[in-house]
Image (cartoon, rainbow, N blue to C red):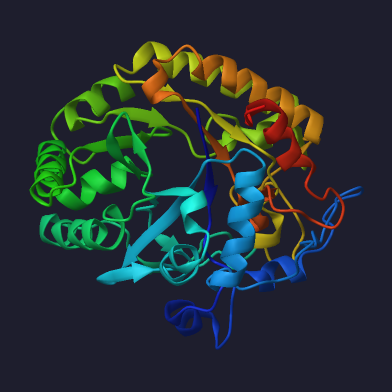
Length: 375
């Protein structure tokens, strides 16, 4: 079974970040500045390895060994394309792929096609500035996918599911918006498949991140996610994070129980298993705390993302229970498509990470090893 952890690559200096936030900026600055926002709130979180540059091969090698030794089989890199070029790609291209042990870990892309907003940090008014648009038209999509084919799909350790190169799209509504219609989006994906075959790389396995699809810019009426993924030709579905299926603020502010989030997401797994005409890979979130992305000098109030409730009770034991439930769910799928996704390897400023901190160490990784690692 594939155990794939999402990887957020914003912990190194990048040209766009320096333009937006100043010379030398990385998202580590938000984590360092985090403060407790309510009684008992554990902030700032301190990484046990310090504030390292994950675009360096030596650090990537340490991450690969740690993940592989604990039963994680793949990294799903959050991948971005803004202003006609890739963004935050240095982690994957300069770090992970150049690590001497890169062959120990499979990898794939989750194209996070959302607009990039200035939430670093988000102001109290919570009307963030648009920094870059995520949607692309047909010509730009061809440019994006040619880059992906040449840079990534030819790598020997690129993840394949049921023989196909796994490629996930995060925000389907923005994808369709850029292409202009549901029909045009489906045609673009079909052409993508043809280009992959023409490159001699076999088949694609297209994965849809299903959540919150509300408005589709097309005259075609879509009743549910099942109809949408069928029309676009996806091969599987999954989710990114539990708060996409659980209203944390409604469950209690500023704290929401991890157990309630698990229950809501188990319901979502069953819902998508019924509604989708394709396999659904369950998602497990380690935790949630997006308060580091808020202005620390402002009152912490219920104002919508990232002004959100923090999960409480997300102990390593509770996480392990969630993993076992997800494993049981995934085992009902055919062997060739059994997979779970985990949020996340390193979403430090959203409070969901598997890398060790100074308090819990590797306990969450040890939970994965107990549930999934071969004995």
